[in-house]
Amino acid sequence: MIDENESSENCDIEEAADQTDDRFDTSVLLPSKTNSVTPLPDRQTTNAALDALLHASARPSPCNVFGLGPLVLSDIPISIKNNKDRGVILGIDEAGRGPVLGPMTYAAAFWNPDAVISIPAGFHDSKQLTPEKRAALFKEIKSSDCIGFVLRVLHASEISRNMLRRVPYNLNAMSHDAAIQMIWAVLDAGVKIETCYVDTVGVAESYKKNLERVFEGHDIEFIVEKKADAKYAPCSAASVVAKEARDLLIANWKWTETSNYQPRDGSNYGSGYPSDPKAAKWLDNNCNVDPPFGFPDFVRFSWGPAKAAMQEDNDSTNSSRRKPKNSGLVIKWEADEEEDGDESGRKQSSLHSFMVAKKEENPKKRGHLAELKTNKRLGIFNELGLSKVTAFVESV
Image (cartoon, rainbow, N blue to C red; front, side, top):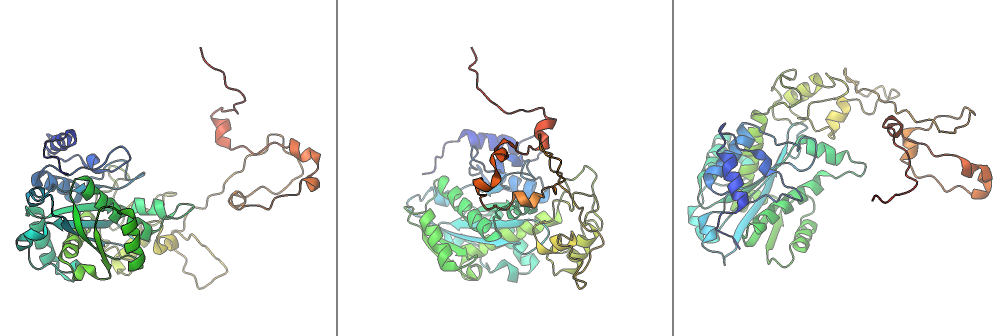
């Protein structure tokens, strides 16, 4: 249950909000194995965190290159604290799954069902609202003393890292995990969830069964449907938070490549969707301007249009394939010579050969001298002067 005494974590958050430069320290919003995100202590601090994250675009290190992106858990509304036996209704939705530029945002909104009379009217799928109406609803959510919310930001760099793994961690899996992280954040804050509405990603029934399995024992009713953001008010509110957060991040983007870095065409990238002519032109003009880095970290390197721009698959036999004017830098991997290698002029091993499992060779065909061959050794070990450990000596 919720502990209404100020925790040390909340004290740290309040101090971060009261820094002399009036900038909220967004590093406290990074979830990790050793740092679970706690609820912000009050609505003023909640809004300070949002301002730093969305308006100042203060991306906490090291989420640009490692780990998860920010997760904001608002203060817990007093109407929920005072009614601990009644579970909240909670909705989840996202914004920005499709763009090649910028982050994807996931959001959850929750409130006590008895406080429904205090919930702003007019919630609908945020994609169907006018920008003015959506901004007005977001302002009401931020100022409401009845609505709690969670925001999870998956920056383009996080999406790229995950999808370009040797075993890809795809966007659907990331989406499911983001929703699970937000639900856990609310539960860990001592808030009981009665019903959770989720706008589905993938097959709704499979998604629902997975959520029921993960949260078994918490007595949560999961309703997972297509277009849930147009049917259920908590999902609609979450949709507003996610969409407004992404739009603000895009509009206020701060480049981290160098202190004075500015891309070609500046911020004239439109919506960031591949179908947007402005986004397509921006992507083409900023492809591999500074080899070998390819793009600024605003770009999802794992997306098809980004790969095509970098000419990842430069098939010269296909004359119909569009050849970008700024193709990617070709990298050749140098294999270390064997320490006692032969001089038979054998063809150098390719990097790919180390990625593909080879058939087990018959020992009888190899000959007894094959066992005396030394294994290949990566050059970095020689450069650092590292040698194999042959024995351990206990220090006195």
